[in-house]
Image 1 (cartoon, rainbow, N blue to C red):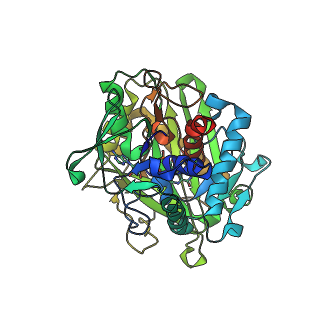
Image 2 (image 1 turned 90 degrees about the vertical axis):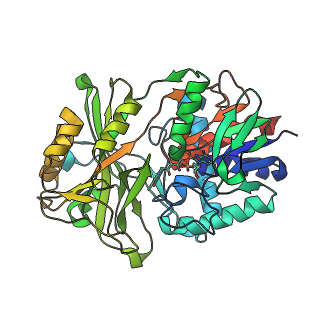
Image 3 (image 1 turned 45 degrees about the vertical axis):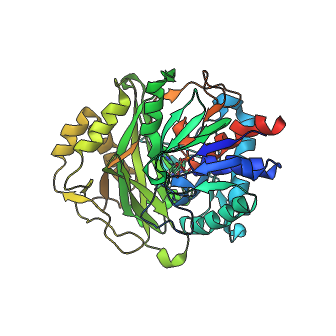
Length: 432
Ligand SMILES: Cc1cc2nc3c(=O)[nH]c(=O)nc-3n(C[C@H](O)[C@H](O)[C@H](O)COP(=O)(O)OP(=O)(O)OC[C@H]3O[C@@H](n4cnc5c(N)ncnc54)[C@H](O)[C@@H]3O)c2cc1C
């Protein structure tokens, strides 16, 4: 029986392991290595690492559409993708302490009042709730451990030898090596540099990716209520085809909505959380205003440089005509340096920042009470490193068919797609 090593105990890796043990694959043959902590010891500050990865402390919204959250249907077709999404959502409900509270919002028509300024993407979303993810993590972890799956925690994989089927685990284990028959590379965004390094070392053929960058917008929820009543996680969008730029509101949080700091490569950028429990209600709304920019040479390098230049005093920036940064659900200030003017940001983001300013100006027209009652955390970024070319039937590398790339390390950008890719990659193994 083959030995499977999964690098990354995030959404993709955990869903893959679950699929295997559910189908009688011996858990003892699965080893999951993660640089973070198990769900019993993972603190709130560690947003990106540990059991369930970035999905473990996310805002728990499971999107249910093949046009959202990254690529799935391009590998396996629409029907199969939706079936895989169902499996991921079922897993989250299965380990949820109150599965009856997982609800689906499904907006049906674009409202007239947002036209002609914006379009609205319509798709269903399942809401799990950030504050339940911790409990889900524990239940899920206990299940995998009970099935014999081995976990290495606080163990950073520092090298992989695709030719000798060998994983090297860094410092903590003192240069320990592990052999695999099959490897799943599921390191998410926190391992994006590592993926890039492997792609360079092995000269893996890749597909170029656009830049995705912008800001996290925050305002009192009342200004957006009319739209939230139609679509909880509304996705306003606009496209400038000739200029290769499109913008969308991304990952909207309401009711108990908190801005979260992400740390990547030592720099701060922003994202958001939604809590479900009434005690956390703050009646705020936050969402990303993200631009997708095509045609930039070396998009990954460009994004990193822009993010790095938007740091001050060791953190990101906050701008508002009237407000100050909010607090986290734990009552701490969101880490951000408040700036009075946007000139420096315009300089760093170049002509692209104008698209964001126009987006905000037009929101003021569509939501007339908004006026100057808003703030932006700068920057929000989705690092998309070049995507390695994979076999479409199991997401394995063209040159190394026993190595599978899945989740954000491949082409996912969300929980449902990451989990679905994890399951899809190992389905062949079950059939064997
Ligand atoms: C604050 C926040 C909110 C979000 N909210 C949502 C949301 O509501 N809905 C949604 O769909 N998506 C959301 N996302 C995105 C979503 O969490 C990710 O798309 C998803 O978790 C990716 O899954 P993954 O398995 O590919 O990677 P992750 O879940 O990120 O897991 C990767 C794991 O790999 C480990 N790792 C990385 N490098 C190494 C290494 N070298 N050695 C050992 N281990 C390593 C990390 O510790 C991590 O645990 C959010 C993300 C953030 C940060």
